[in-house]
Amino acid sequence: MAPTGKAAAKRLPTEKQPKASVSRYLKSVAPQINEGSKAALLLKGTRCNEVMGQVLKDLRAMKAPDVKLLTKKNEINVFEDATSIEFLCTKNDTSVFGLASHNKKRPNNLIFGRTFDNQLLDAIEVGVENYKSLSDYKGAPKKRVGSKPMFLFVGDKWSAEGPYKKLQNLLLDWFRGDPVESLVLKGLDHVIVVTEIEGKIYFRTYFVKLKKNPNGGTAPVPLLTNSGPDMDLTIRRTQFATPDMWKASLKQPAQLSKKKTKNKSTNAFGETIGKIHLERQDIGGHAGKRTKTLRKAEQNQKREEAEELERELEKEKEEEKREFKEQ
Image 1 (cartoon, rainbow, N blue to C red):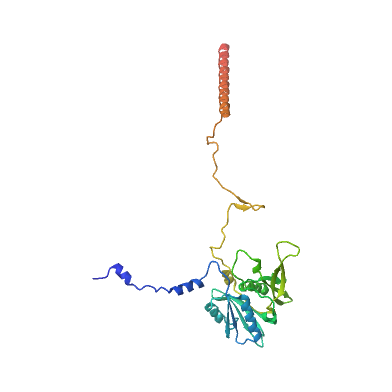
Image 2: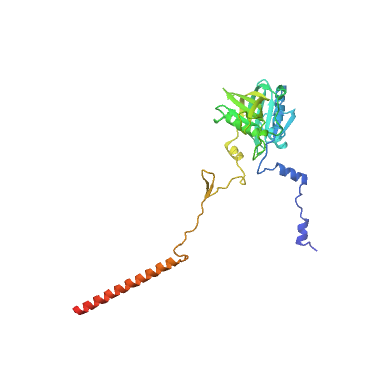
C-alpha cells in the first residue's frame, strides 16, 4: 500500500533547528533597532614597543567594559589588505578597533578604525608623541568603569571638511557608550579635550570633580584635574569610506524615524495647537431652536406681507374701476 500524502510529508527531510545557545548567540549578534555601546578591539602589530603597549592598556581602561585586548602580535596592514582586521572584528563581535605598532619608518604608530557590515569603513593613522600614561599620574582620581567621557574639540579645523572632521567623528564613535535618556551629574566624571594647533593634535584627559558653588545656586562648579592618558598626535595615513558605503552606514531603521505630525504645532509658550478639518456644513438647512421672540417676529412679518398684498390688490381694483369709467 502506497503511503498517503500526510505520511509522505512527515518523512520528508526538514532543516535541522539550531540549539538554543546558538539561537541566542545569533540573536545577540544580529542588527538591533537600538544599538548600545560599540565594542572595541585592541591589538598589536608585527612590531610593538613598550610605549605603544601601554597605550593599548590605557585605552582598554578608558573603554572598559566594552573592549577586548589581544596580547599576541598580528601581521596586519590595514591600508593594504583589510581582510585580517575585518575577520578579527567579526570573530570578536566588535565594530571599532585600535592597532598599535612601531617601526623605523613610522615610530609609535596608532590606527583608529571602524567597520560596517563586517567591512572596513574608515581608518586614520596617527603618530604618538610625549605620551603620559595613567600610571604617570599616581594618586590622581580615575574615572568610573562604564562612564562616558565628555568631549571638547578646540580649533577651527574640526568644523571644516577633511581628515580632522573625520577624526572627530571617529573619536566620538570610538568612545561612545550606551544611549541614555537622562544624565546624573555624578556620572560626568571625566572630560577629553582635543586641541588642534598648527597641524598637531593635543589629546588631554581630565578628571571632573564637582564642588559646591561658593556664589550659591544649585549647579555645582567643576574642578578639573589631570588624570591621563595624555599624548600628542599627528595624522599620517587615512582611508575613508566611499560615498555609497558612507550613506548606507548612516541609514536608520524605519522604526526609529519619527512620523510627521500634521496639523500640529507649538506656540511661543510651549502650548500645543492643533487644527481640525471638517466638511463644509450647511447651516441654513439645520432647524435650530425657535424662541418666542423669533416666532412673534415671524408672525409680524407674515401679517405685514399679507397687509401689503391686500393694499396692492385694492390698488389694482381701483385702477380697473377708473379705467372702466373712462371707457
